[in-house]
Length: 332
Ligand SMILES: Cc1ncc(C[n+]2csc(CCOP(=O)(O)OP(=O)(O)O)c2C)c(N)n1
Ligand SMILES: [Mg+2]
Image 1 (cartoon, rainbow, N blue to C red):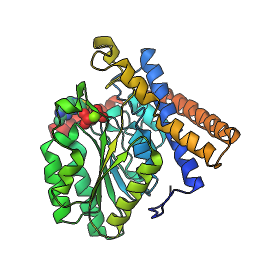
Image 2 (cartoon, rainbow, N blue to C red):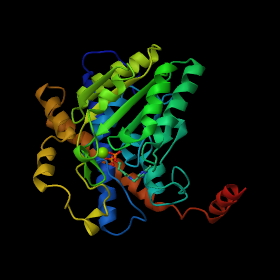
Image 3 (cartoon, helix red, strand yellow):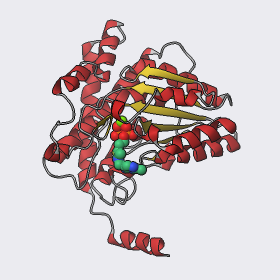
């Protein structure tokens, strides 16, 4: 993964890398969706389908030594930051070969060796955690940055105000990456959110911008500026990325809600703005790749997804001994 780059456009190699990474996230999640439909998944999954450009456009600027926190919709953040897909799937299945030994599940995938502090089932929970990581990075003085991915619903939690405040006061190397996907569970954002989200950051005199979250190049550009500012000790930034979640809030919602809270037409309109198709068209029209090259990338990713799924299904259940030890720690 490339370090922060202050360029006007990502290079052809970077665009191809981002294309591959988005395909990997999409491929893994389509597999998980199929596993859910087959009744195999042990718990809930919140899929990131349609939002891949945000995690990928940002993480293209990060190294393993930088930190990120994700959300309950966190598979894409984990994979974009370089997390291994096999142990992630095993984790979702609650198996001992999972990235957290099967004890965390879908909403708690984490890998500190890659700077992935973790997904989080508590909406808004990543904000203050990221400020802590950013403070550690500032104290270490090695130019690391910390990025918090959070939703438009999370932006209505009080902790956002506290984190905007301290991160500005302490000039933390932190980036607020708000994924405005139009819904908070089943509530359209206009029914629960007043005002513009990026304006909240401006009240703290923090640089804040809005981007098309389905355009990976636009995300990459905004992210590059914010990461560069943080590395140069210029303090935090806020990016609001407008996007849409194509799948349900959770895969299970079809059983209790159907698509009652949104129109099929709306979903279809957003499918036409698919971030992967958009990058594909761009690569082809700019002559950065031909159909053959893109098909080869897709075939490589498909193999990787199949290997990850087989690893994920291959381990035993999470160890009872570990469950017992964790419960003892909790009681102690
Ligand atoms: C503190 C807290 N309150 C409520 C919930 C229940 N909940 C789970 S996801 C969600 C909606 C989050 O919306 P948003 O932040 O926009 O993320 P999205 O699901 O759209 O990615 C809610 C309310 C929770 N997990 N944690
Ligand atoms: Mg949302």
